[in-house]
Image (cartoon, rainbow, N blue to C red; front, side, top):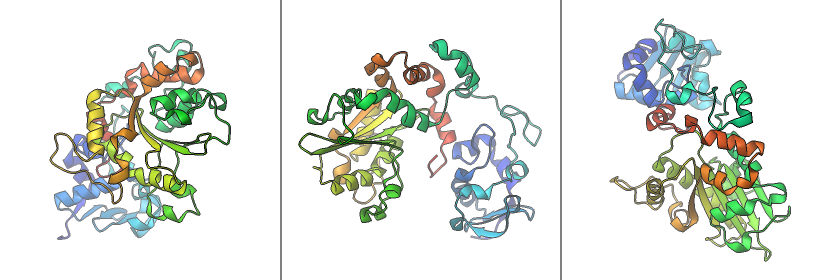
Length: 371
């Protein structure tokens, strides 16, 4: 490529805020460049025939994967592959190179133009929330937690497990677990329950994990029946984001090496697992689309899914997949009404903060990368 250099401020401003947000280059309420911006920005540079973006002598990014950021302590050219975080590319630089940067959401950006108004999904984070009851005053003090990990690692276990897992059987039945693995309660020797589980980072002495990636299921439950046979339940949960069937299917496919490795190491029959997608409100159309994507027949699309090697045979059996809604959890666990975490989930599901539109989802999702 011919060496074509442009000032990054001019480059971004000429593209326009809406396009940059859709591509995932500008992110968040403060409209910032983040580590997640690097890949889509370089792809956009290639599309526009630009080999180098710069801001005087203090900041630059080259299409070959080299950057300088004197605002963040990188005075000499650095390869992207040598830094621990892509965020180093823009550390300390937003207020200088980003024409859309805003210190405070809803204020003025450095160019002096008023920011876009907040979308309805963002505008009512701390307000009177529907069905909040006695929790309302506290939620107005601290807006609803929008970190997905809170709901999967804290709220879900507190509702679903109970003391000695005496409530877990309700969820296991929803997930399609065979009766012989379901008990009224589980002793410590009958179950292993993990959240945010990275097998690659946990099984340090398993040679089998060397070939798998760091894909992290939200919840992993390993059960043991009285006869010693084991059953695995893996849950991928989506809370605050709109999610497409193809995106959820792709993430579940990427988790199959984790599932296969656990099952092979524990000498489990290939049918002894359930793979659960947990989303706000599943529809029949969404479920059909998810199963079509997982089995390699995406509906309405003339393409095959991008399967990783070795995933398709055992990983995409529709009989192993279940789609459950967070509202289904509320319906199934009404015995927990009044308990803090149940009430928090009820408040969240009763308010539009979870119902993000496709447009907002595309703005939040970096092109070619994970959030």
